[in-house]
Image (tube, rainbow, N blue to C red; front, top):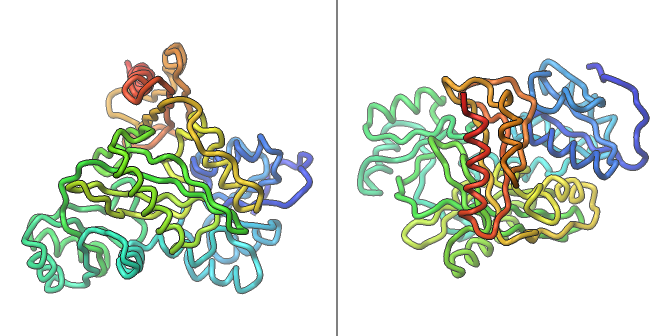
Amino acid sequence: MTEESSTPRPSGPTVGIIGGGQLARMMLEAASALAIDARLLATTTDEAAPGMWPHTSVVEDLDDGAIGEFALECDVLTFDHELVDPEVLEALERHGHVLRPGARALSFSDKAEQRVLLAAAGLPVPRFAVVHDLDELEGFVASVGGWPVVMKPPRGGYDGRGVHVVTTPEAGLAVLEGTGGTVVVEEFLELDAELAVVVVTRASGGQVRYPVMQTVQVDGICHIVTCPAPLDEPLLTEADRIAAAVAEIVNAVGVLAVELFVHNGRVLVNEVAPRPHNSGHLTIEACVTSQFENHLRAVLDWPLGRTDLVGPAAAMVNIIGEAGTGNPATNITEALSVRGAHVHFYGKSWREGRKLGHVTALGPDVASAEAVAQQALDALHSR
């Protein structure tokens, strides 16, 4: 494990970030603004963060040896993703290392555990079951009135990966066989809207929540986020209440993103992510304090910043690699000519379907903000 550069380092506690994706990159940008002593552990230089941060260690795998060595250099560890082996995390805590969020909170990345614990706590979730074979799957299908149903692996899926809308027993069996035999199956819902609430909890217990945001998913990938969510106030109040209740159960230090469904006028918990989240990227420009700065403040047990919008409305669109258009970064000057558009690229190589960056815009209302962001996105994807 080698660290690039030996430039002077800030004084104060050292934050170690495990994982080198775009979330780590934006955390490091926030760390730089506050002169936080931050170090990065990544597995490849093709990730978003390693190329922009001098204090980076690159390893072959995020195994116990690599993380254990890295942890010795840090006062607190936090995460770009939830893909580290849970046994490695538990071992780190046993040896006295500080993980924020901790191993218990990170276990909520397991969708089966999420569903079971949240349902047991009385929170509203879609009808679901954790199934292991075709008989159990067909039993669940019968209980919800038939096909289709939604099947997803407990761990590892994101941006729609591994999520299957299944319409036949044969297709269901194929999903079971492809995931090793344990799958979360849920009723298929026609949705009124999808929402997200970003909650930040300080190590000593203080908490802030960002305004409720609406997300638009295409093939399981977030394409658009708007804030405030253009829904009736009772629904927004209920979404905020449910997110606060979820945060109390998960007990995660730092950012916790709570994804919600609105179905037939009822708010349901979809998924929980104990880390900064795509829905919160617009907070960089749209809110007094970004989710990334507040995440770092929380894990260091510093006072949390205000989360209110700095203007009436904001919108964010993801920059996703599209077939036939080439690398959108080559059109950045055209996008920057769109007045009011804030363009972020993550420094990742182009690939179709890959999140390469995002554009945020503020406006007098959601529609106006979204129109500006979309104009810049169209410029990026022009040939």
